[in-house]
Length: 158
Image (tube, rainbow, N blue to C red; front, side):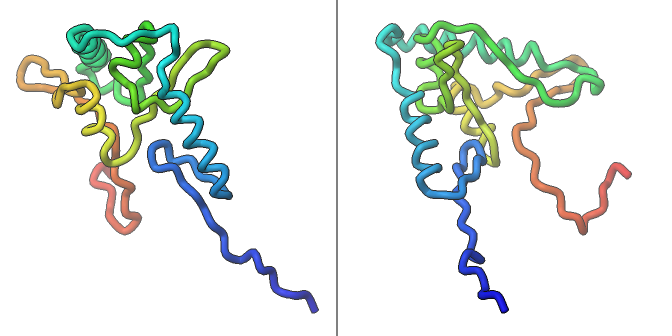
């Protein structure tokens, strides 16, 4: 007769921002250190004046709205990549940078979950950053979070 396993209790450590799950607390701690290091401005970058940062935010919001199309055939996920100087990027996203890739020099930000839209509103300084209005009172918008559907609720589109 075999002895029962003592590993029946399984801990999971999740980082709320990106949803990454770790088996050990040390893995989560290392992930947090990586994110903290990514949010440290490099010596080659310099602090921009607030006016320049606001201009960069306005350009980014304009670019996002340009990507929003009127037709429903353009629905779906959209990834936005913009070339910025490190100084511009840090001016807008400092504190929200998720990763830095030294080989390519690219930074990555992740905004997920229930508060993602409001977090981006705060970062971009515009509550309407994800809405584009068209003629005849039509609008297109960014949907950053969708509640998981309840399997007991019927799908209204079927």
